[in-house]
Image (cartoon, rainbow, N blue to C red):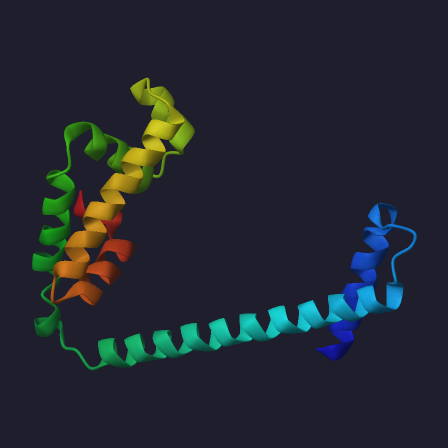
Length: 154
């Protein structure tokens, strides 16, 4: 990792040599580059370790459940109700762009609106879904089901 930090710092310096001021202290600059590279690497590793622990914890939790405890159909119905409760325009945009997988640009063209309108309506729909999921005692189930089965529910 130390060798990579030094190598990346030299590569960065070389790629940005035309932008550098001629009076810069190269030794100090390289020292700072290596230091930042190492700090970013450590920060990234800590995030990765936390995410891995969370995934393992969720997998252990899910592995201990039986199908009866999950009651998938009821939870999918909850998600479907939230989507159905969205205002008509918001629901149309959400279904087209998220569930059907259309790009924001294509959705905007199809509905005759602006791309920013599509973005904001999708954001509103996600916020309402998130609020429902957070209020539910089975919020982890709902989150997982929502992410894994969007196309299945509609």
